[in-house]
Length: 288
Image (cartoon, rainbow, N blue to C red; front, top):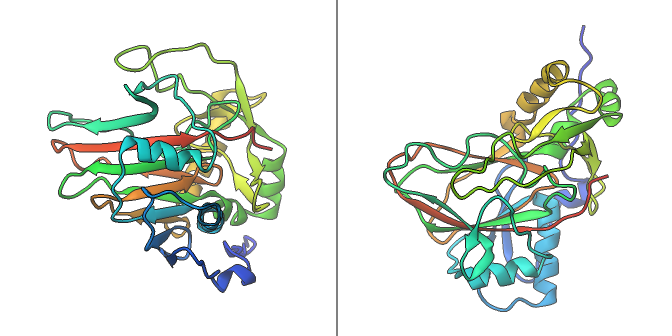
């Protein structure tokens, strides 16, 4: 008989009694991750106290949705800079006057949209992203939801023996599996990048399963063929419904997520419809 695996709660008993924020109100999206922030205008100058409270909410909920925002590219850069230095993606050109802002655009004649694989932004870098902010500029009438997975919860649901095995492994992350020199993408030399399969969140201390289907190729010292069965199991396990949330975009929605502890997936169900998003990515540190 297989042992019963006790899934650890995503928050402590202390966190279950949700912290009261002085700068805004908050509604959790579900029991896995995500929260909606109310009564906060991000285009205005934010005090240090507000920034600290947003950071606290992000560490607790991992994904934050802010509705009814009005964000120019300059506003997006300003708010991103409050949480760290902004990453300039070497593969995607930013806006002419705001190189940190990536435009994610789909036109009516586009049959295939941006991406259809679960991933964590910039995991292929030696210092992956801390977080990303994505703002809805123009949306189709329906479709284009974004799904998020709690990788701390995914790790906690594994058996102790499997957890211990994974703690001994590092995995290769490569960008050139999906980016090429064609179109707006530029191909740049990349050193081999390995990250621990299990990382420690620098703020919460949570153990995080740090692999993703888009960029993770193999375990260090193993071939892709040898690594695939375990990696595929982890990819499938991580996106169980009880580890995820789904956010429906509305005009003026901004979503801020923690790339260190989540993966995300863009649904490709709006072919033939226009969609325009602006994104900034906050630089991070090498995971440990």
